[in-house]
Length: 365
Length: 250
Ligand SMILES: Nc1ncnc2c1ncn2[C@@H]1O[C@H](COP(=O)(O)OP(=O)(O)O)[C@@H](O)[C@H]1O
Ligand SMILES: [Mg+2]
Image 1: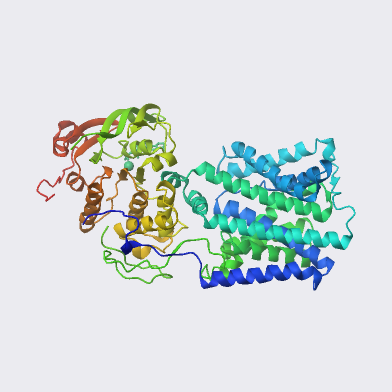
Image 2: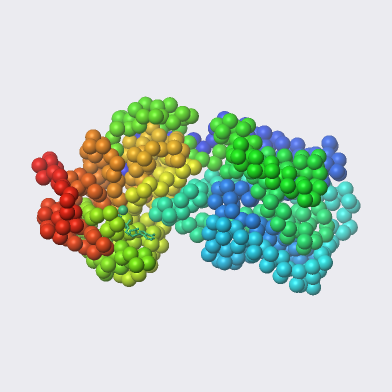
């Protein structure tokens, strides 16, 4: 038997399936939902509900970003509030203080979040595992302290976002709502497309075994850095939205570590390592906050208990339950081989193409 | 056959604390050659492959590949210039499918994206008999299939040099000949093979030259049968008898 690894002989042309009927349904339903939500302010969404949904969108973005970072790239950060704060202060600084207006201010705030994340990565990436997590927290605290030193940024007393001055409240609320809707679509879509790309395969490879990934040509540090910067920009985006909803940026509020706790909760409740999970998790988290109410300390304790229970009894989260352990994928990121069998060469024992893994295996190696 | 050197190792040294795992190691591997490595446990065989693959940095010494100094090159870039590696203790990406595992090799180190990458990955699964498990999460594989996956991923990178670390370890007698066929096929297609193996008869039936390591030093290097007969090698293996399979058809 001679072995050659010819790439494209007709006999071994691999048919890879990247979308399924479920994913098409997912796409169509997503488009309909987003279209309906976009039309909402003209028809069925009250001001209050627009504000509620804006909050929900912020949670979805935050959950999606922490999931990208921890769930896919294997980097457990507890310092993402740093970028929420930078986004919030960034838009105030760029839009108001520099006078660049809302749109350029928004873009600049994201760019600043990305640049800070890039620079900080050279420090944070010297640490790994638990030290990395603690390191990100320390970095977030330092960024918080530095921010409060600048008089132009309110020097710790907070600062108002004035770029919406002159907007009627109902117009402002609708505009912020639409920006938030666009933001959540972009954040989820970018994450999804990134994870479907070759880079995404690199993220998960590095997460599972960085040494093996490097041996197979994955630039481990570069891969981590991309995930880190994208997640920071996503959190920065959420920060700009927070500033737009509160119109007042308080350092103790935007930089609080609770944000990261909420992100972790959202991801764990919804299901880590899936696109759908953080969306479900954000809805649950929002509902809890709305109907159980933020009662300070005990609220956090309840969230903690729920999260621990989930980890123990439902590690794949609510989406794991709904999708029957991943069998239903509305946003599949993996590569499915459509025809894994049917080769003249293989003397492998036959097995079902999917689902149950075969118990017997090939005799030839 | 022209004996141009593909891999040259000069004065390579590595210590872990007080444990010497490579001590001034110098040798060459020729293009297209099958080069075997034996030695007792802890001799530094796996460490040598880690040094060549760039997983760890040497304390001293130089590594050249295809005439180029790669001593400072990162592991990922060594993979891209054509050095592939199978790990003695398999290191699958447990939450990715077998196919996805192999696609990482073909798309990153192999540089074949999209359909070409899929085809290369598919061919590697076919060669290693893993096709029926393509959709299985790698974390669910049993040891033998994990070893196959190590080989499949390495093949998918389209290597010039492949470093195999005890790829036959744990295989039954019946499973060894097909593995040897696969390795011969690789050699026939022009890939250079460096193969660490304890199953000496399998190794000797394939390799052109053999090197014996002990405590990070080269005890003997050269013709496989002569190496296995040399007094120094017999000394370190004292008490073990070898079936070096001189009668085997080659
Ligand atoms: N990363 C490491 N850190 C510390 N010691 C190591 C490391 N890798 C290998 N060693 C030690 O180096 C010696 C050689 O190991 P190894 O190269 O795996 O031997 P072999 O593959 O020949 O059995 C052993 O004593 C081992 O414990
Ligand atoms: Mg070893």
